[in-house]
Amino acid sequence: MKERLLNFLVGSVLIVGTLIVLGTIFVFFRHAHITLFGDIDEKTFGIFGDFIGGFVGTIFNIAVTYLVWITYKSQKQELIDTKALLTKQINISYKPDVYIKDTYISTSVSTFANGDPLSIDVSNSSEDTSKRYEHLYLVNIGVATAKDFSYRWDFNLSECLDFIERHIQNSPIKFEVQNDGHWLMVYTNEDDANYFQVSGLFEDLRFDILLPYRDNADVKSLSLPLPYIVPYLIAFEDDYGKAIRGGKIELVYDQFPPLLLRIAYKDLDNEVHQKRFKIKLEFNLASTTRNGDKHERKFELKVSGTEVLS
Figure: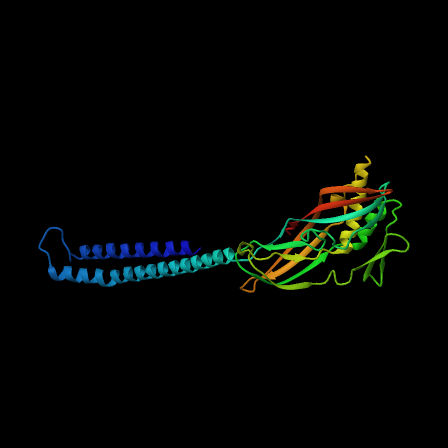
């Protein structure tokens, strides 16, 4: 719109100026102030030149001044836009960017010889301290520090327990949610039970900063929610036992209710960034130790996170 208006104004000034010059020449010829064949009247030509230079020249000067102002304004806006773009590029290049680093955890499940679960090790007793339950690694792959972190776990415990009930028949391991959902009780037999705290899992947890990973900064280790991990591992062990016995595999990876991690953090300009990751636990290695009618299976699971874009 502005370009069309500018073209119209410039064209109008040129047309009007040209018409005035031609009209003035015509008037001078019409009244014999100028002749093609004859002596030149210096006074008349002086008046003609003064008129053209004074009146028509003023119109063109105004037009030129306006064009110079328009050009200056346009260049000024281009400089502002260029500066804003460069600032944006710098800000993007100096932003934190948080992701989940693939890692591995170890666990063990004791079963009867027929494959029925007997107990599950949730004591974090792996000899390799980097392969315990609590380890999920956040890394900052950006080039700036991330600060003021908050995160929370998102999963449906009822759906996890329903999955166990539907897919594992006659299991000696029983689940029970007590104290208005504050505790998950896992009974390996009538006299033995493990307690896992549920309350607080779905609240925002916080930590301060995460330095860029390229600076050899430590990764941030987050505790995986055991009320989710334990049912998952029992379903996984049942799936693995069926595979060994040649039975039908239920594909726990795809069917078990999902585990999500929601995080929010700020960059150095206090701009808030939010991300959501789907956590996957996949089979990597397994070994079985037999002791009479009991088997102990040790598993190594790969823990990874895929960002959920929405």
